[in-house]
Image (cartoon, rainbow, N blue to C red; front, side, top):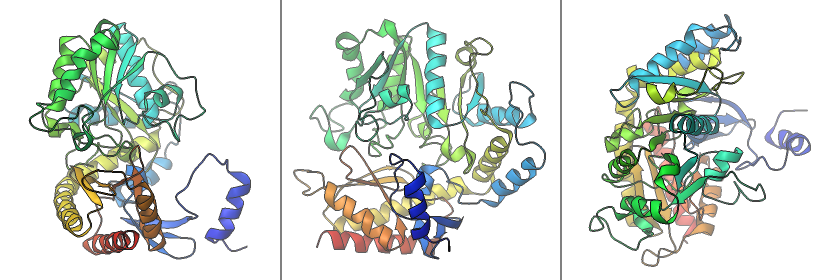
Length: 434
């Protein structure tokens, strides 16, 4: 039987659990750079990047070569049983490049959710306190704890309770839909100051181990705080002996034009979680941060069978090398400026685009039925992503109402691919608003 999309989809229906979702009946045959080709020979421009995993591009040569070289020598030994240089070298690299001039340590795991879970474990151990503060519109993973920490109920939490205890949620800095009904900058970033009141009405600061924040809220709609926001939160945490954790799983590794997104706010978090594009396509995650905090857990308290797998470590070192030495951070800045300009032109043409936000090429378009009422254009956003898929552009929505378009294209995207993708997006906006 020929390996077509249709044939594989029939096999999928009989073997893969229904809860594992897909945006469409597409199976990839091969991929390179910012595009992939499906089993039917159709090419797709990728504005999703494996949901933010391939910032350095699909099948980046450096990453592939590093994987092949490492695979010839060692696939797995478990770092707890027999150590290898790659784990140490990657830890050294993260210590070097992550924000903060303090002494640091790093540890590696398998997924973004595992990194967040371990950041909580480390924070609880170091502080002796149980509580965790997270934010509305946040996404941190699908395990019991990280699902609890995640804001959106459907599809991530629905029917999966009861949830983990000692997780507290406060408002986020959503300027386009301010939860306090204020306007920036006259508000003076009142949403950050709310954390002080939060300790009175929601949870005592004396019981909070850590506050965990995405620099840009990913699944929640690429919500991007103003310049004062994170410095204010960090200071409040310092004043109350609370560990400040930056969840850089999606926003890190060059996605916003800097290696770590928190650099835009001038903030060096106590702990930082990393994953996705760090591996260049291979599964790996980590936590890096202050040595006194990272070293709090006892030997054996952190780890896992596959954490810091040697092949994944080799891929990560190659991906970071590509970001640092192949001009990709500069390319990200250029791409971000270009995208924002293109999106602003689209906004003038299509009033359905209510807000443009983000940093670098990590940008979002919030779609609304009316610019004044800001009613979420959920159905039209769904129709837009379907149109784009049909015409060869992989485009993802996000946000609590599913009305936000996000861009996570590989930083190596060519001008021709970008032009083609934007033309499809423009045509799609015209079609759904007709």
